Length: 145
Image (cartoon, rainbow, N blue to C red; front, side, top):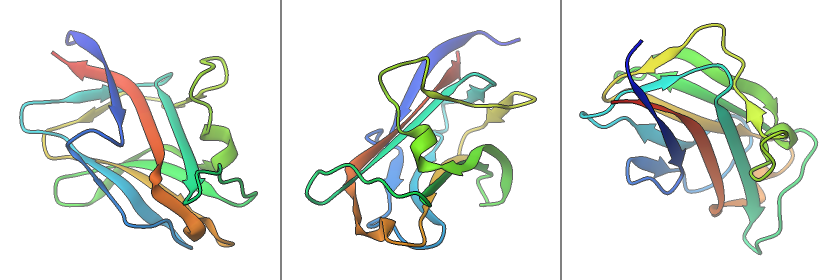
């Protein structure tokens, strides 16, 4: 097994692009492209959080809002779903590690240079009113060193 170091990926990472709005139906809200000099090893037990706010900084809560996290190849093909789809409420905890959403994977997933980690959101009744700029996400995983 290669040597690893804890790596926290957030929506403010310089390698993350951000969609302009949430929407009805599935949207690629945040997309991280793994840099040429990096590889990540995503494993069971890694933590994921996403918190959505509207433009007035009020936390967004809707019973049918959904989230998922995918790994796509550099060419855009999905080769792993690492989280979800699950209800948004299940992933909104950032502080209490006992309540933070954990990835339930049956095997490690290697994210190679130029692969993408895609944080997707969906809501049929109005998550499009939430503000991506006021929202944030986090994936706590491992970087191969």
